[in-house]
Amino acid sequence: QKEVEQDPGPLSVPEGAIVSLNCTYSNSAFQYFMWYRQYSRKGPELLMYTYSSGNKEDGRFTAQVDKSSKYISLFIRDSQPSDSATYLCAMRYSGGNQFYFGTGTSLTVIP
Amino acid sequence: NAGVTQTPKFQVLKTGQSMTLQCAQDMNHNSMYWYRQDPGMGLRLIYYSASEGTTDKGEVPNGYNVSRLNKREFSLRLESAAPSQTSVYFCASSEGGYTFGSGTRLTVV
Image 1 (cartoon, rainbow over the protein chains, first blue to last red):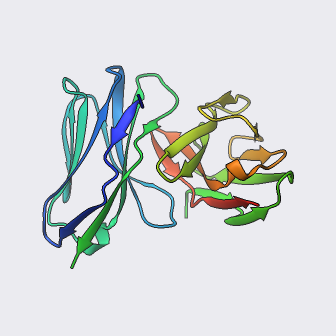
Image 2 (cartoon, helix red, strand yellow):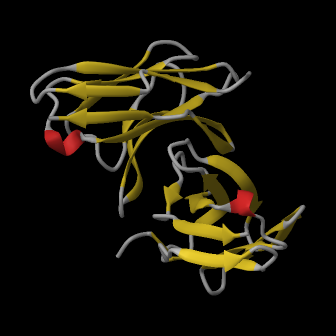
């Protein structure tokens, strides 16, 4: 079983829709959680970075962590065609050196 | 612009050839990483360096070597390239979240 599971999609939504992207994980020791956005043929760029459980909001993006369910989510409100990309979740242990990545979910927002 | 710079951006190698991928960061980060990204496999850690002078194996180190030349630079070497090493390689540095370079697309024929 992989440490981090992520539905690869693809996910296609109309412009303006609310998008929900999710990851599950197996190890309860994970404490730090990130979401990355990766455009085609580019490197991943950090979107959201959260510690432990709870919600974090940044503009149209909200990251949610539910440690009891070992489940994290990224919500995108009022989705735009420029949000079309692959979204990667990542997480690491407290004191750890590396992040463990999901395989990514491909999102297309249709104008 | 501050960030992580990788060279080259593209490379085609013949089986058995060697090459070094270069990475430099100007954010004064202590930790640097090399990942490979393959379809359906996600990002997998090859090697990392928690600080200048130290390196450690990641999930898929076989066939690779690394050098942390100084705090800024972390290189990845393929001594004898194999078709299984065809991939996109990303360097990253970190103080908390990662900052990635733009990647090297390597094809081994």
